[in-house]
Image (cartoon, rainbow, N blue to C red; front, side, top):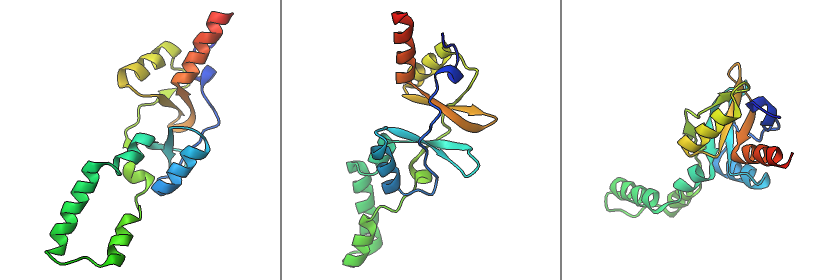
Length: 154
């Protein structure tokens, strides 16, 4: 029976680059029917994680209010050019700008009970698996549940 991250991790990892636009990240998540992806550089080093929540935060009312206040201050009572306002509506942010930095990670040798504790304590849904600082897999809550179900069934 599986005992470590290496035994249950997903090895085919959907990942994004730090320079990917928010729209590209959203398209990647939607295309693969996942709710988050690791952000890695060209060498495979984990930089952070970007989730649906990270993407949605910028569309919330708090963000829109803050943006409107800054625009009003910059305009100094003048109307802003429609072209400028249209430009601002286009989301230009990147994965590096919206990702969660300092993602919790584990190694291939980390035990499944320890991973379950990390996911529960941190209230996260998945944890990247690293080997020598490079991303090699992901263990999600679903991976752990499948393992528990397999143990119960046999």
